[in-house]
Structure formats: structure tokens, C-alpha cells
Image 1 (cartoon, rainbow, N blue to C red):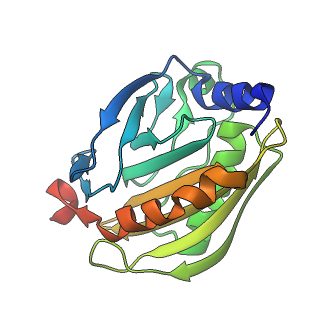
Image 2: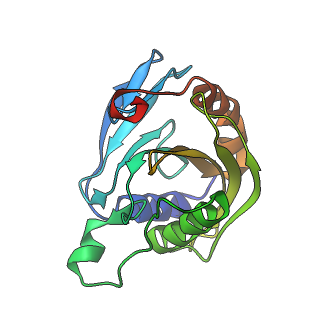
Length: 202
């Protein structure tokens, strides 16, 4: 088990911008952000964090300190993947942004930079990039590794695709010991069920 101080530190990093609210996600087909349809195989919780900005929706199984699933629901050219509203208000340096002409390597680097900035990590890296079909089209997949100030290592997987100049994807990450590997099969099943709907399917 992780020390309580590590759990609290991780939770504060994710939720620093505001109090989170949780909504039950049942194991039946769900539409995320009006553009991604998935069929979870177990119960999740949707996290609403007022201080987070971006075209994202966040789910968790055991709480944000232990694992999170971030859906990217159509990030457009010139937008960051996500950011803290407080950072923009404080006049911090502008975050890196997505460009519709980016290749998978550049998107991997963008996620690394975004994660390092948002989570204030000492290590944020992507690796093992490869092509992977998603939602009936071409996509890509890579692994992630985060090491925060709490010294808890978090493993992750990002799967994404660019359609009509917008980025769609899902990033699952969790504490490497127990919480990531335990739920990786659920993430893979969820991704395999993904379909683009609404404006994303046009």
C-alpha cells in the first residue's frame, strides 16, 4: 500500500485547481464528450474538477491518487491538451499546444511536456510508440511513466488518433505497483470498444 502522505500528495496535484465531484459510470455503453462511445466492463467514476481546462473527461476506479483515465474529446489546433485554470489566471508561461499536423512522435512529446507541467513531476516520459487501430481507423499507442514529488512511480498507456484535424484519445495511468497492471486489461477492452460518434464521425 502507498503511504498516506503519498496518496494525499498525488490527489492534491490532480485536484489542486478545485474540489472534485464524482458521478457513477455504469458498465454499459457510454458517450464521452458527445464524440467518443465506449463500453466499460466495470463501474467507473467520472471526476468533475472545476479548475481543469481542456477538451477532456476524467474517470477513475479507485480515486485520482491511484488511477485515472483521461479522454481527449477533440483537441483542436492551437489548444493545450489540458491545463490548470489557476495557471492561466496567475500569468504563468503558456502551456504547449496541439497542432493538427503533428505526428505521433510529436504528440508523445506534447503529452510528456503537458504531464510534467500539470502534475509537476520530476520525470515524465513516453516510450514504445507503435501504430494501433482505434475507432475503425488508424491510430497510435505509447506507454508513459511519471514520477512525482511524492516519489510514487506511475505507469500509463496513451492511445490516440487524429481525425479531421482534431485529436481524440484515452490515457490511462496509475500507481505502477498494483493499480496500473490490475486494470490495464479493462482499459484495453474499453479502447477496443471505442467508436467516434456525433461531429467526430462526420
